[in-house]
Length: 319
Picture (cartoon, rainbow, N blue to C red):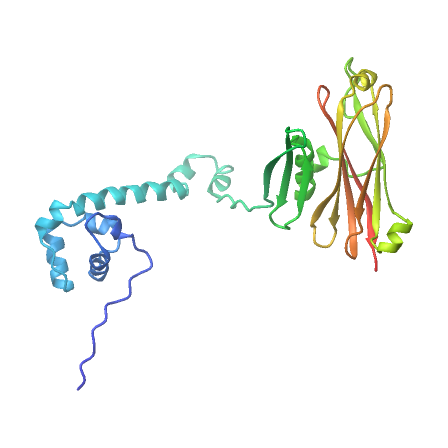
C-alpha cells in the first residue's frame, strides 16, 4: 500500500499578513497559517507557551516561548488587530438596529432602514498646466485638459479657468452645464442685470467654410475656416474698449461618434477703441470622415471678466 504524502490544507482567502510582525518570516507565517492562525486576532488570543505548543503539535516548526515573548509576537498582533478593526469600522456602515427603528415613527423607519446606493463615477478629467520660454524670455503658459473616458483632449492658451471649465462641463454633459452654458445658439439673452457697471458679451454667429485657393489645389491639403463673430455691449463697453482689454477666442470640434474633442484654434487679441463687434478667424485642416460639432468660447479678461459659449454648427466631412 503506497504512502500518501500529507499536504497542508490551502490557506483561506481571509488572512492577515502575519509577516508584518517583527520576527515572523515567510516560513513561520506559513506554519502559523497551517496551524489555523490566520488573523492577527487569532494570534493575539494565545500566550507564548500555547503558541509554541500549537506550532510544535500542528507543524514541524519549533519556536521557543522565550523567543515569542522576547520578540513580542502577541503584543504586535494585538496592535495590528486593533488597527484592522478600526479600518473596517470606518469603511463599513452598520445598519440601524431594530431597537433604533422601533424608537422612531413608522413613517420614518422604512427610510432609515434603506441602504444608500453606491456612488458611480460619471466623468473624470486631468488638467495640466505647461510652460515654455517665449521669444523675449517671458514665460508662456498653456492648459491641457484630457477626458479620461473618451481620451478627448483640449489645449488652451494661457491658464484662465473659464475656457477649460467650460470645456469640461460640455464634455461631461452635466445637468449643471445646461444652466451655465446655453445649448441653443439662436437664443442669446444677457445674463447680467442692468447695473451701472453692466457689460455683456454675445456670440452672434459661428460659420465654418472650406478654403478654396490655388495653393490648396496644388498641395491637395484641404483646410477649413471657422469665423466667430461676437460683440460687446452694456454701458461700460466703451470704457473697456478704450482700455484695450485682452480677449481670447477658442474653437474645438467634437466627433459626434467617439466624443473625442480637438482644439482647432485659439486667438488672443485686444479690444480696439470704440469698436464693439469683432470677428475671430481660425484655419484648421479638414478632419477625418465623420460628423463633428463645433464649440466656441469667447473669454473677456478682467477687470470685467465675461465668458460666452456657442454650440454649433455641425460639420459633415465626406470623402
